[in-house]
Length: 338
Image (cartoon, rainbow, N blue to C red; front, side, top):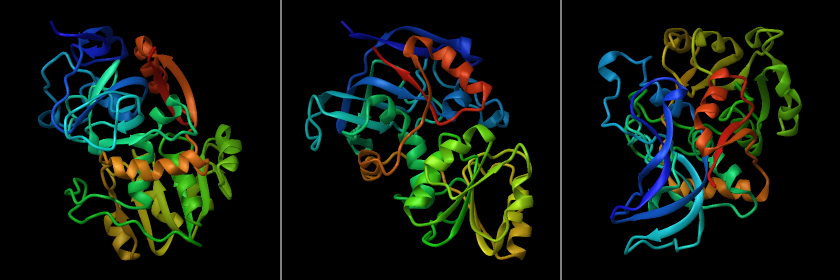
């Protein structure tokens, strides 16, 4: 008889109301995998895009998974079982992970559930100094910030450009983080500061106090003035917002500077960047347990912290997605699992 668990599943794409809390088969682990009893789940933009069927993409790129599916990637929990041959993890260990991303980008990585199977190579021990809620909020956002600023950590082809993304030395440099109040942005601020940069945080006024607490040297409220009108001669701009008119960010940079785009789709300023010797670069975050463990040490010692916007029970995933869709998120939204 198949064991069951509670999970949030999609039977069709659509709005938050399509997320159904129900019984589902409990996963079985295979070679090299660990079964994790989930305590908390972090919500990320790809969760919302997949729930909606990636409707912003051209039709030929949109997913056609076999429903029902379980979305989500970021978990923190306790090891329930370990496959033969797996070393480094044992039953009862507290762990966290970004699960099978981007491999399962278009079909869901099964995180919105009481149990999830995870490759041991994608798993890290949870930092002792933080709770499961903070740990679940970290993986995708922290790995994104780490792979942009510190080390890519893999040799997979870059889907956004023919060349590999290369982080740059930050000590003594002026780094602008656009979208500093969001899930990735507030971690970019802290990692850049940890690396010795002078950090300019661009966000709405409600984030100013938080940005100062996280170490930002300067703050620009984009609701009162255009950042590109007041910031000039920066060494690096990291954009965690995306969307229309990203070309304006070039105006903040000195010749020979760098523009890193977390979501580069739609950027049309490559010609202007080349004229000024500005390097425009992006990469796609990938699961990496060893990197997560390395970055996790900063969480453990308090050098970096993850800000929690709000938390919801797993059964209220639809309400959590509604909150995410409203925008204005400060940090991360987390689902808690009883």
